[in-house]
Length: 499
Image (cartoon, one colour):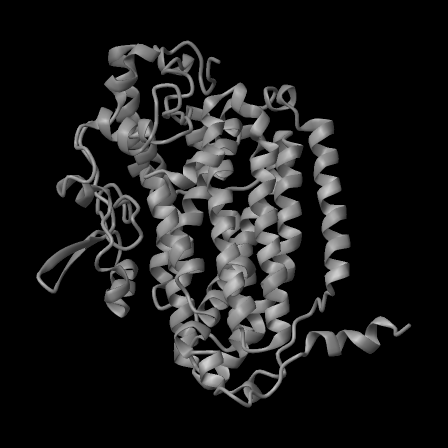
């Protein structure tokens, strides 16, 4: 019997020359990607893991067995019920977004599995597609039992199929990132920018917080996913190296575009969890500190290795790191009925911690929360007063990222406009406007929520928008976690919340 090292290379490298069609017909540029190069330019494509199918199956079986074991030991309903209320709501948020993102990744990897320019690349992309199926199924499996306890957990499955404004924004990102891309852009945008950079923050940083929060099921879920991400993240680097060799300007454009697109969503998904939905005593670091370690330090070193520059808007990004997710969280709280998880007003102790971590703009954010506090004081606590402390006018959304116009600060919003082909567009930031201008044909006809209301596609009345368009119900839409019943609001204590 041949040893592994004697047959693996032959099994991975199965390309051949075509005799009855042209190579350009087998791998058309529109779906294989730019720059189009003959296979001779790709035949040295290699990645570190060099996994065989048998090894892949054995490894995945062991990982799944470990997940099931943790679920059976500490992941039952009674275990989740012991967790802090804010953390449980962060779990609801992640439970909904993860399957959507991972499931679309199946399509992206399958595109690489067919149109990647080297057989070893195509093999690893095939494993990547199987990975993404697994990543979709894990949260659906682990959190299914929780639906009978809390109907908001049903959004783990339902979110993908709704027109909730967050779902629209998430689909807009991941449909373009994974389903609407050629193989080259997919693997650079996903494997290099998202998985080498941001998912380390998401899966490693959040796993550490889950451990401190006592949620060992979530900890095992994300670390098990991350072991796969680390492997198929390696697909992107040799793709990027070849693109840098032949068209470095295009490689820089892809980095600039996808860093910003990914940053906006991760800052909300991970920023909410780290700075607002993890109990204060269990927060070792702020979201900003995690970003400084995983992105500003480690990911930038990766860019240097490839000869890439920081994105042109880097100073804007550093400014947004101080304020953006705080702005979105305040908006999310104000319009919490449009969500599928609950939010809370940060306590005085939490705001003191946030001021220490984000001193540059926190005074402006503190003023926002003081206004919300005053409204609760005026109407008094109680679920019957929820809508009295809730936004009533429709917010505006960015025509590029589909998120609320929350860039900038409470004193100076960064929104800007553009007129193109007789139509007026509004963007949350200059980078979003710049991305639109690079590929207007890709983005021009997508309608954010307000435009859907104006054209009659979505209802204008908030109750109808929530129930008929967002598919929420009074049982599942977001509320104040404590119905405004904060002891520190009445002056009885300082920095604590009555549960």
